[in-house]
Image (cartoon, rainbow, N blue to C red; front, side):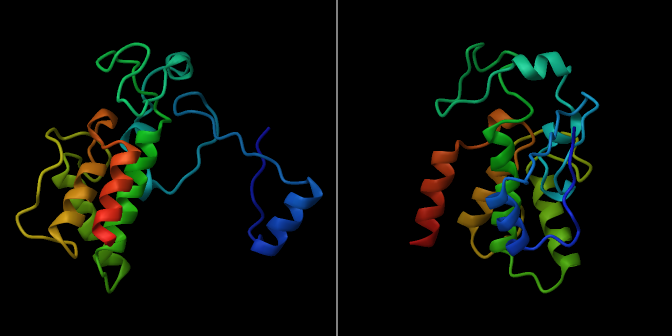
Length: 176
């Protein structure tokens, strides 16, 4: 059973619901299984919007490990679950682009992040267009380093994205 969130939810009411034990987890399901799916489309990784295979395959697939391999091996079609840390890296890549973009309007943000997604080898509708992360002709973000990080995180295939430890290390270098 799925429960939605009240449109009048506030941090205070959410904290109270948690403390009273009345908060309920939403069953997000998996793409293709008929469940309810959440998330803002602009931030969803391509594998989250394309389904990634049958529900049975998705449930039995192993998650990407920090070493980049799974029990099946890195090239097995079930080596990456549609719901993996790599999906989170993609979403965070959109946030990195937003943080380093200095956008004046939401329209400008959408155009630049869309161009970065395309440059990373993905069309704006979430389907892979080939290639991997590559630098755009002119920097669109505050620095080439930030742009390279965002491009690598926006790679259309989960195994082409950096591991979370690599993202953390690069982000620390960018900040320092």
